[in-house]
Amino acid sequence: MRTSPGKLAISAFVISVIAISAQIKFNVGPVPYTMQNMGVTLAGLLLPPQYAFLSIFIYLLLIALGLPVASGGGGGVSILAGYTSGYLWGFAISAPLISFLTRIYFRKTGKDLITSSVKDIAILLTIITLSFLPTYALGFIIFYRYSVPNSSLFSWSNSVAESIGFANPSRFWTVFIASVLIFLPQDIFMDQLIGILLAKGISSFLQQKGLSI
Image (cartoon, rainbow, N blue to C red; front, side, top):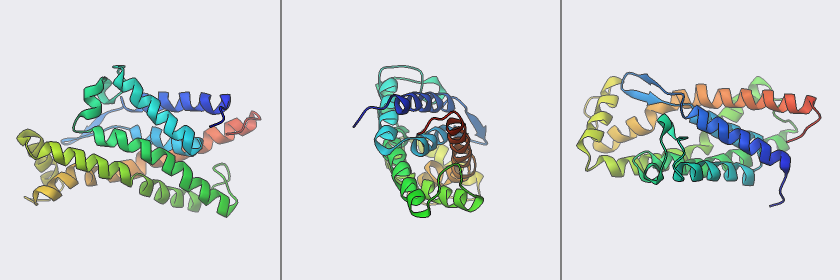
């Protein structure tokens, strides 16, 4: 990979955004939400695949080194092996996948982030949501593995399912609702949409300054 100072600078910016967005935490009922997917979306839209992967890799390394950059100011190797670790590892797949697929879309349509229309943004939302499927899959698998022997974790999952009208679904669906389904609206219509709009604004700013990404 040929090193680009400009792309390294954007990578550093993206890592900072992911770390900061992980601290933006709010609860709706029993469900905790963060804005991390916004940072991952930015990584995929602003950087080529290899730099998008590098950004996530460095972010995970910072967590492993104990820096308080994970959700809630956490850090340490235990977080990368905990019940929410599947989402973090999934980011390393989703960010470069977003980059790869959105660049194919722009190449085929002859557009870019700056010239994207409302229709383009809707299509980008679809592409990005599909790109996050590996993150959701890994997140669910790890969360399910932990919830089976952990009665308190499963009880929480059941309270989440009940809070949106699902009464006593199977263990599989209870965990799926609590670890994937409940997060989709916020991920798509907040994190990803804001990520697209921010990337569009940053791209326009950089172009005005005579810089390219």
